[in-house]
Amino acid sequence: MAQQFSQQVKIRTGLYVFIKETTNPIVLYFDNPQAVYDELKQAMKSPNPVLIDKQANGPIKRLCVVSNQIRGLALQDEQYQ
Image (cartoon, rainbow, N blue to C red; front, side, top):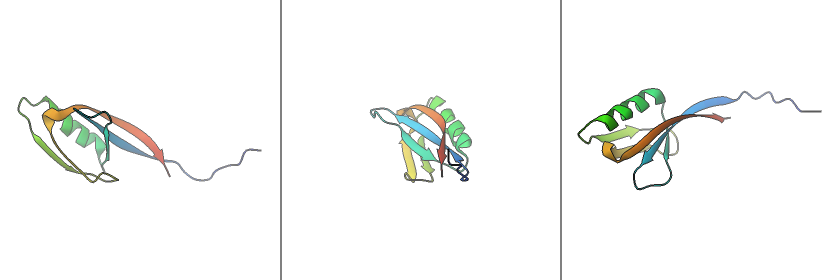
């Protein structure tokens, strides 16, 4: 007989930032990850390099990078307890 789990699964969204010259992405957590994603995407499109300095939640507390060093961005939903 399968045991029923009464714990509710929570979902958070991680922002994956792929930096040039690195193999693994940096995973950041924000209160509003979609807004930060849109902001970083706009900075990547800028013809002039822009310094990006963001305060994050989670294990990595701060991101400071020049926009022309960002190779790509992704949002991913993750389950946690």
